[in-house]
Image 1 (cartoon, rainbow, N blue to C red):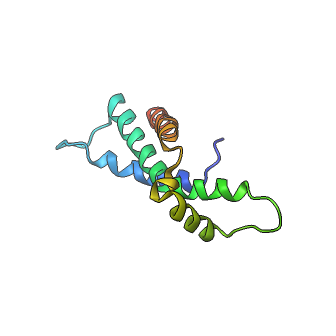
Image 2: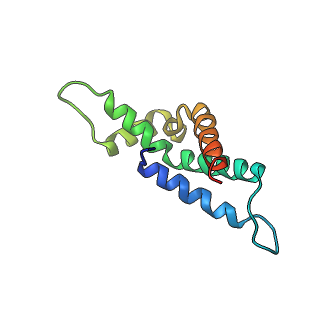
Image 3: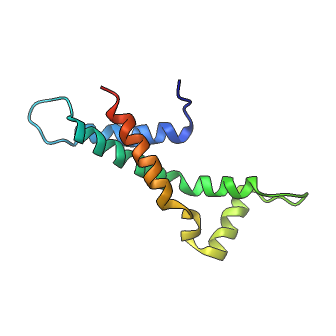
Length: 110
């Protein structure tokens, strides 16, 4: 059984509205390409939204010693040193990984 995280539910919620975007006068089942596409788009959307949280979490986990920073302090430091792009460090590999994971997952739910 797959474990669900808050980002999994967010990505699922981003994927579901695309089911209703398909132009059709009658309600019909999505074909495989539509399922793959909408799953990929939902996965990418969720990854974009949750990426700053994951970057902050990763920096917090690498902290050592007695002086640790709060997540808000970490975000401020990243924005000050690297700008908004710093919160999206490593985004391209994650988009490919999560997008394809959700695409194949959505494709498999027939």
